[in-house]
Length: 133
Image 1 (cartoon, one colour):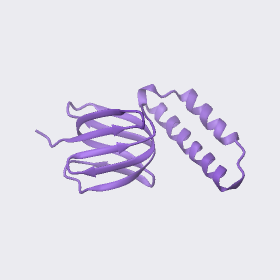
Image 2 (cartoon, rainbow, N blue to C red):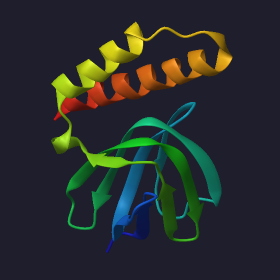
Image 3 (tube, rainbow, N blue to C red):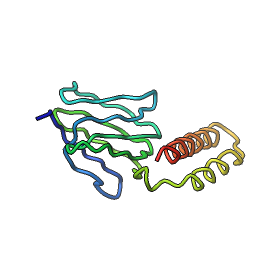
């Protein structure tokens, strides 16, 4: 039997998942990471993009995650994110609309520029994942 670990996927509203998995792959703010059982403890800041894992029955399950944090401690991976949407539920037209709105929005000052850039990154990640389904 392959080694397993437990994935907790949590948003501010609810715990979306609490299940055993075999491996996990996700987008950090500065790149991609893959995690297998036996990983040393770590904390990472999530980016906007894919969170994919292999369940114990061998199926690959993929979500869009909206930033947050990931913690690996022992045999538990905790993912805290603003929202997690199954990739099958993403709509390319909605993502394109979000991107167009973010690109068209004027921004003055650092705070507005950072918010616009964040919204553009989020919409691009959603659009990319919506085309992969």
